[in-house]
Length: 240
Image (cartoon, rainbow, N blue to C red):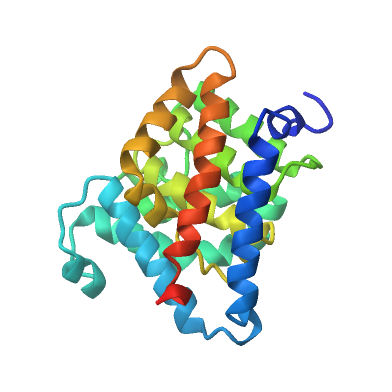
């Protein structure tokens, strides 16, 4: 593996400009809304919106009211538990990403899987995929932080390393990386909501990422992710 394993992805046609434009928009949103004065309630609302969207993407049939009241189905409960845990893992994902991913899964799958399955990869191949992903995260890179978050998301979805809840874990990990790498330090964006709004594109590009034998699927996913993060800003509680 090269010293900068993400450099080749960051140089794909159209990718640098797409992420740069999205980052400019996000920075303007956070700056113009007075980020330093942002109340914790905005972060709480962003996390709640994200959990609701993630649960819906995972197949929850609970109503929005049930989700907000915390009385939804098991999928909702998993997503809500993860939403309350994710920001505490910022230092962990910076230093030991594998531990952060394992913790997200353990929280999501509590009460669903046997205790010995919580946070554990399904098999040796899954463990290796996680190890490689973690090594990418801890290696120095010049790649945009949003690109890193997008790759984490797609890798965790396509590898499906855990016995359950891989979608919820992947979307939470994406939010976690956006926070840890300084894109959205107070977690005010709602990337899960963007994926729900763009669900057809989201699912199509994830399939392409997982199935493509070359780089076309990765390229398409990254361009999609730049668009989705712009929508994540539109869905922020800062917008109302």
